Length: 317
Image (tube, rainbow, N blue to C red; front, side):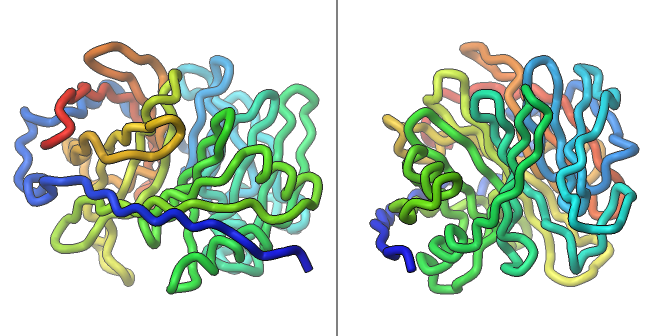
């Protein structure tokens, strides 16, 4: 049995001024929607990355990695889950790996199961983009390592970014960012070495109707100085109005240490209430950034949305 040792650095960081959000006026929004397109053939989109002039998208109940062009037209799909007999684009809930996040490292795309159900969702798929090869890895021991860091003993990883020195996992249940050293993490997963040490950075995110939002996606700025994140709010149960709304925000990275939330704003509801699941960076400027987000409307289809986010220089709202 591997040595189970980890360093937990626990720093509480809040997005201040949260009570302002429910009353935000549309004309004061930092987020402006430019284009929206329904992704007809992708069920329940849950992750997106911008990769070499293409967009790669996953769905939380799909066995495929989808490649789309710059206009979000289908190019091809790569089957990730080969062990199941189903051949369609949607897997049954009991057996789905619940793919929720992915990140790029050199020529590979790493795709994570959420870890919300140990027997089927403690999994990592690696797609070698250059050689068109898919590999699967069991990461139960790593996710169990994360679970032991939380009192609830449960996790739901929905965001995932890789930097040169560190890897950051965003847990929706706790609203924590889990940081590990990249080399140690890769050595554990791909070379069966000891578990990496972890640091935890918890955040207080905005609420809607008294229900807190939870991390749902993340991407890094090109200079690695900022982490852009999405969070969403939904009621428990099967209510017809389960989805309450979503947010986009930015966290300052201080030498690969997650800092405070610089700003966060509610996603516009001109197209209805959306559950924003993931975010990708398209272009950056001093006063704004262009982003792509994907939404899963829990039965109302998947969408890709181009939007512009105004940069708010003040750290307080």
